[in-house]
Length: 361
Ligand SMILES: *Cc1c(COP(=O)(O)O)cnc(C)c1O
Image 1 (cartoon, rainbow, N blue to C red):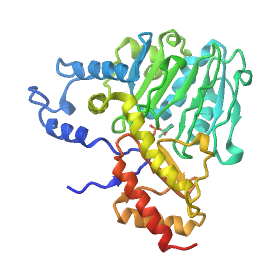
Image 2: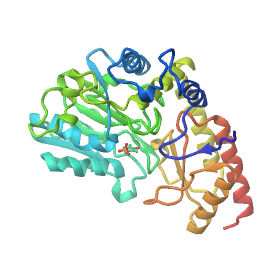
Image 3: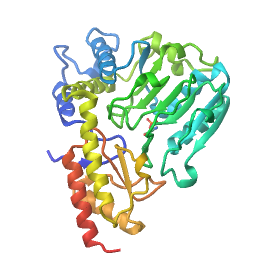
Image 4: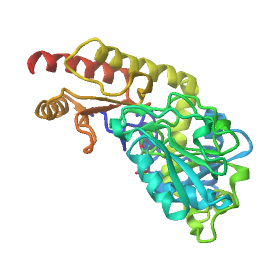
């Protein structure tokens, strides 16, 4: 078996022990005599998987009792509609901070459902930082404020949690969930597609404060109504059973290595290696403002599109895959999620040094 270092922004690497456990249990789970893929979601074998996953995630993220955890489908992008459908009914208004492409899409989608405004954006500077806003930026009668906590495409992350006062704060954490501890109580809703840091694609996790349930707009499809999902333990219809099982294995793995504090330490080490190297030389340029640098997605360019292309191709040939930046920004992006081992980052830096030596600008 020859595994590569996969720097993909998502779907992305999963911890090897998780893949191995899943492989060992693939054909027959426990003494059920069947694969998890073949199980009824209402069976005695499956129930401990979904309820166990919920319990483990609550433990890992220290989710308070007055929050529901929902296991849904449709990706984070479906939540771009579900968020306003569930929350905007109170006042008909919502405020968005647009710090990248995904928050832009979320903003655009929400505009279909009410009076939705962009209160701040870093678009004019190519999203190289996250706007700093204080409480006065928000409309006091906004039903909620929406942010994207880690901007996957640009490699930026909120270096603060906006103070929204009594207005519920909603955060898309698709590309940073489980990378470090977060104070869940500071948010009304946290949502994340699983395929960056949690599981294979097909699962979306929503963590929602209970008092925010039950106010969905009447037009809300049943499948997007969080209250219906909560009342049915995420089994209003067939949930993404196998992906939830994979998420449970990832949660168990993270707890086994010391939980999110330990994960944060390792992620900080990996990111520091790469950023320290970037800061120590002038061949590669890291466009993001240092205080907004993402620990998960590290972007850099050579300043020459042909060299960028050559870099990604030669890196791939050397077993460092998917380093090409997002099509909308170019350059390179190294996504170093939880499952990327430190050796992967060390190898990448060594490749970067050699490439710079061999390709003068
Ligand atoms: C990947 C990503 C999305 C889109 O997720 P889907 O599950 O593909 O809909 C949205 N927001 C962020 C921050 C992402 O990283």
